Image (cartoon, rainbow, N blue to C red; front, side, top):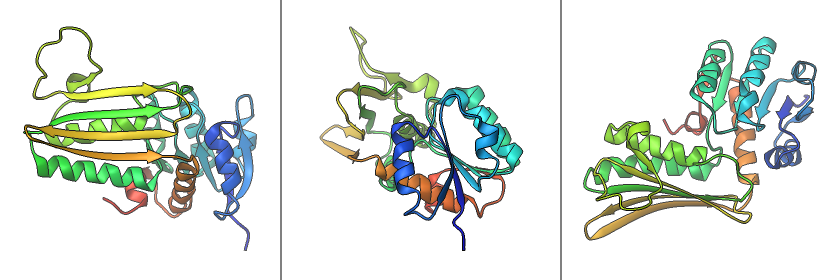
Length: 245
């Protein structure tokens, strides 16, 4: 029995290289390894599933090519604009797409725990999100940190654009009860650290995840690629893949 054929967009990047190394042990045959300047149509037409870890500016193009080829798609890029997110959603009406800010099983457990902790601890705890990544990362906050804040906003019935405060400087006054602090640190070769802080008078709860290898994310993306091939058209994330809904 032949292995399913995998297309990788962003094959020369850090995540792309990890996917190339792990694809065969995970049960895939790499059919197309594409990067900047390569022909998407020619490189992806024979694939059974596609994983995109390139840059957000070509996500719409990759999603459209997947739609034209009727091929399931896994998207791991972050930093998308609202228009790009909408474009992905439109393509998901025709093909199944896993669109996730993080493919780590541990991080997706952190997502689940963050929601549960926010529900249990209630409104008397102040909320802060802290993330650190390597000095080459282009977007801030990370997609994972943003999603953590979105989870907190959902539980508290807040609005991300209005209630999330990105860093603090100067004489800003007392902390608003409704705000969620967001802090991005960059330095060295840190793969990805994320912490959610719940702080009340007299006690503090912290939930943290630290990644030491990109293999963690690559393995999760390959797991999602296997899963998505059996799904109906629609927009999914790793919570669906892992059965955490």
